[in-house]
Image 1 (cartoon, rainbow, N blue to C red):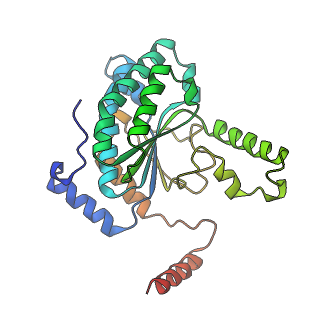
Image 2: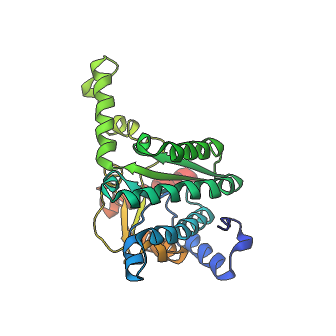
Image 3: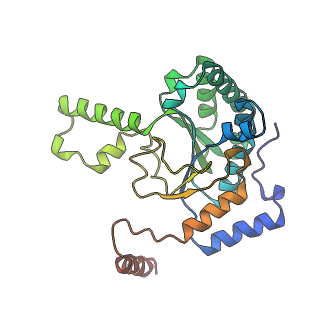
Length: 273
């Protein structure tokens, strides 16, 4: 498995130009989340076993990481394995876990060399011990890196995340550490698995399905969505660029009207002078 090439030396002139134009064109999302869907269908259409689709998808992960790091994205969150995925055939789950172990072993050193921080959210204790150990070693090795945070959502679901937050908050209310009337959006955010990262600005879903699949439910309240029919193994940096271009055309009003946004931008510009 080849190393992740993060430096511009490995980029084509066309790629450097495309990234430069994106940066000039508008804001680059601080947090990009991706639902990596379509591996099984990609393999089925080619008469291959489903695990072959997952293996092919590793190259897409590598390219997405590289492109996002080069663009200056601060957080990249990848929906790698959902809580519901434990319902899949045992043979496929076993193959997926082995693939995860192999990938972590081969890529962590290179992530560290490129100042990329590895993170994970979800019911991680459900992972096989050897897989969990590899994951923890990668997280520990890269904990001080600052260029971009790569979060793997493993054995994760949005409902699990919200339920855990409610349990933690209820326990604090019970113990007198928190008053129920003080519970607000900020308190809930602080008890989610994603408390140390901003909400996603852009969520990309491959494979063409129009659903969120229990991913970052609370966090995606005002996230911009980009759906592509491209299966994950065929997804490359050009698709990342297309998604960001679409994102840059959106007016993110957060419940306000356009005129209010315009005034806020004027005030912001005046304050920076």
